[in-house]
Image 1 (cartoon, rainbow, N blue to C red):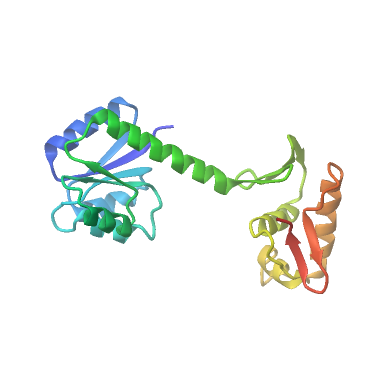
Image 2 (cartoon, rainbow, N blue to C red):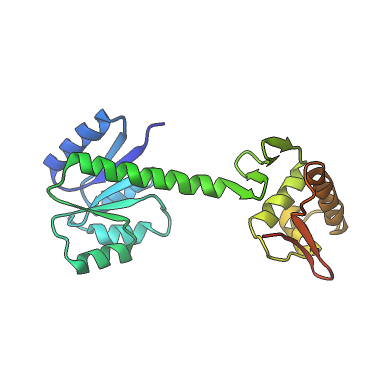
Length: 224
């Protein structure tokens, strides 16, 4: 997989050097020379941004504040100064790290690689949940006991997904029906109990442990 790297800096010599270095390492590189152009390039969803603080028009701190509500990728500030107050401002704006100019290309690559690995682990954690001996792969919409797949119908998996992503939270049948079947669906919440019974039966074929608990008079919850 080619990582997409956005280099935002108004110093042409630095940009040229970084393009040559990172393309040689197999990265796909995009560039921007000011804040407005950086915002446009961010729309292409880079995997990591190297962001110069002192750019014309809109500085890197303001760019970071603008994009942080919409972009979660790591942002590494490039800066010629590194006072404690600069760090506070940068981290408050949403930055993840600082690279001080002049910098070592080898150290820069190591920092970039470390942040990309951390981001990959975070994304993996959001796609997979380990609950006891169960593994729930949300991306593949699959449920496994140890390494054996437990076959679930679509709505059955939807219920497992809803409850397991909110462990300990109690959902009544009506709320589960609204979230899984939709507000406009024809039918009623009585089907929820039958689907949960099926899920429990399928899991019980592999283990005695109970994952979906009935809270009498209230609803159901995923056991933490």
